[in-house]
Image 1: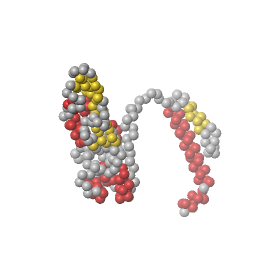
Image 2: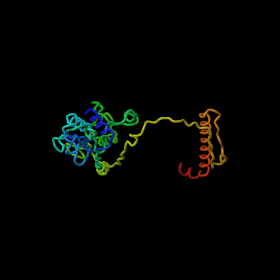
Image 3: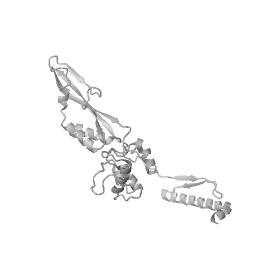
Image 4: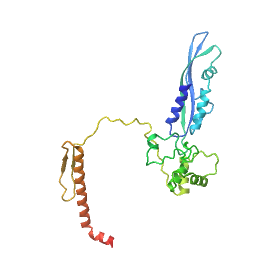
Length: 273
């Protein structure tokens, strides 16, 4: 059963939205009289473990599923599905998880943010309460983002977060703002909400297969005085070649700016006046 609990954990970690979870087992029966065997495959229709699927929104829901599975007698479930008492459960062969993603799901995270986000000094992750160190589980993440957007300090958000939430809802059992409700908040708080998805979550870690070292680069400009092709070739140090190349681009830019000032000098004079 420990392996099954671990599989549920991995299934939860793989999801990026709220979802419903159910499962079913495949098993083999053996007939003591005829010595025949029957395989009963897992099925989402008539062989589900739970009459109603679990709604998975946060880690509290995950803990509830984990506790239920730890007290589950899988062999007894299989015995209840025998045609008659002549059949015995020979083996539990497999488990199938049925995940139903919910389209109208709340905005927020369904799992802890990855380490590279949490440790990035340029990102205010709002992952945990700064005073308790515990992950936020109150579904008010959008209102914390709003408080931060309105210039609140990351370590002093709770008062304003509660203020913005109470403007939007008086629900004591708040499940979060759904994607479909975001236009209503945009209108209420006069802002644009931009939602990000962690689309790189399932990609493999970067590995270097080869390193590209520049050997040469060419420049062909239409700026007067620099309109002949020029090629830079490395003599063994790519950094020196790149520096020479960039210095040449700076000269082109300065020349272009000087020509622009000369051509539109009367316009600039009027602007300065």
